[in-house]
Amino acid sequence: NGEGILSLNKEPQGTIGEPKLATTIANVLLTRTANMDKTVTIKATRTSKYQTVAQVIDAVKGAGAGPIVLQLDDLAEK
Image (cartoon, rainbow, N blue to C red; front, side, top):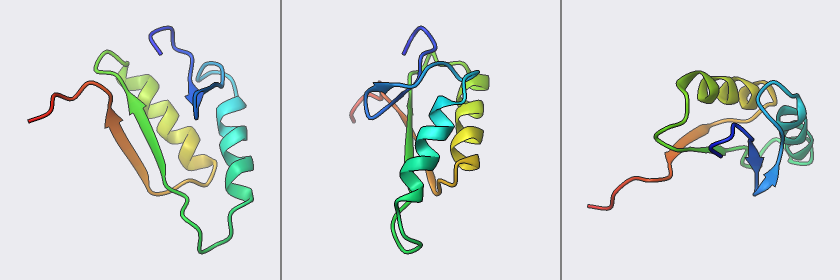
């Protein structure tokens, strides 16, 4: 969100400086078997700071997710 608070499935996960997001994702991925999808979509606004998005990608990768999809929430439809 605009305040730097991260969410996972609309549940607040704190800021990027807190380990809650990576821990939560790692716990979710642990329940998946090797042949199950571990894709994570990161949704960011156009005003999101590049550094924050990069840190989220690093946290998600470190938690074992992949592939990682980036989505902008305000793309105009053509």
